[in-house]
Image 1 (cartoon, rainbow, N blue to C red):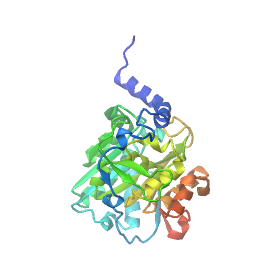
Image 2 (cartoon, helix red, strand yellow):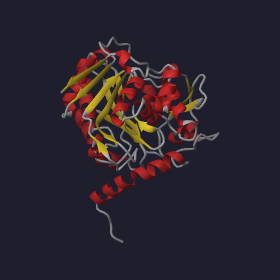
Image 3 (spheres, rainbow, N blue to C red):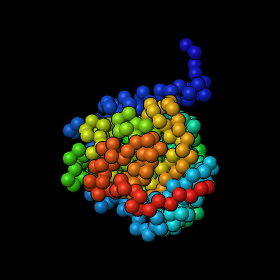
Length: 328
């Protein structure tokens, strides 16, 4: 049998990602699918108040949309328009950046957060005095380093001064179990310990098609904060996403729509659109509602956005928050 060299392996890993990702999420491979006694749902009990609270800021505008071709310049322009990272008071604090690193795909395939965007956010927090910046994800692969090499996030984050905390699908880290008050789809959930240890949580999703949720953007990206990702897909997924967002509340969302995966998501390969934009804000419902426009989709068509508004996570009426468009 012919042995695959490293490049061939990574190509094949990328090609298998979409199919394996769907199987992992719908089956018991990554966890227990919400069954009673699931070991991933065991651990120290915690309350929502132990999670990092969103920073209180007075941003001059609700959403910032940056158009451009240089990811680093886009991040700088967007953060400046939103009031700067200093508004989050990161000096001396531990910052956790939740990216989408789930697939062994290169950036041009639009399945993961662009590594240059990630690197610039890391640099920004380091320059603002953060004591530690951690790039985090719980991915749909078993081979973490190979996946991070292929999508470019590993090298970019490390070069910018971040440490990485990325868990394989079947080997999540330690978790604490939260009871979500009033939840119907997700009354309890295991949240990985990394989230609790953060002082500031930043959400950096990739805007893309998703076979189960319709679209994967900011709200959907937080599923990677949970220990048993399969559980979310075995209940009312849309309501579960919204309920998760009532307790896991980032201080900042930076959505990557430099390119978007238009079909065959979440892992691709598929048709790729090139909006050439990033969207920044503090309201994940508003960010996602704006980003629906990149796909020609009405926000009201996505259940998790409707539930998110109903549960007080944010508003689909993003225009009411004020939208500033800038170029970089």
